Length: 287
Image (cartoon, rainbow, N blue to C red):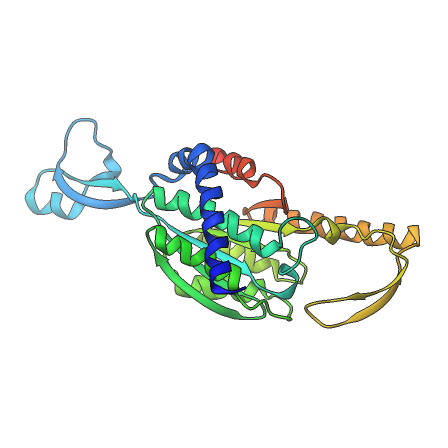
């Protein structure tokens, strides 16, 4: 895309998502994440009704009267948007490519976080991590994230979700809200999901096109894997072949949902072009 086209696309996404965010998501996001964790504020003398667990035993022993630690909510959160830029994400048979759909969802999340005065960062990955934008606040920063998702060079390589999560956990130590976008076409280590969900609040979003799950009858045709370069001839006129393909995709999705559930992580299966705001609204409401 030309620079003017990119600017136009980013502006369109901002206008569209701001309406959705303000109408449906902002309030739910704020309610769900307005106070995550506690941080030390001050020490004061004990008052009737204070929790015993808050007693500062060192100061109590020094002054021979009880003192308690006063804690306050940590208002500022960090949101990490982790996006698969393997070649299969640069695909779509409806009005939007997967990458454009991801950019729009990321915009909604980003503007929700900005409205809560939270920082937002971005990781782009495929077979390795290709780009990292450190967490920052503000509208301009969110627009930069949208632009980077739209204009990234989508890589003809298998995606390595494990490497992306491992990298993120090595760099970002503080507990964060992590939104992982991928079509999950490639293999991954489910142990890494468990490790990541223990350290961060993880939501996996499988972004799929309807043709990912079912291939129509187009006769004897050459199928090409955009990530590995492998090619196979297939007789799509065969009802048995189409059924076997569709069942394999369903089984893959069931295994994916089970892995996230066993990892105590959240998961969404989102079709390009569907109304993602309702799904995010329900997710925030549950939190």
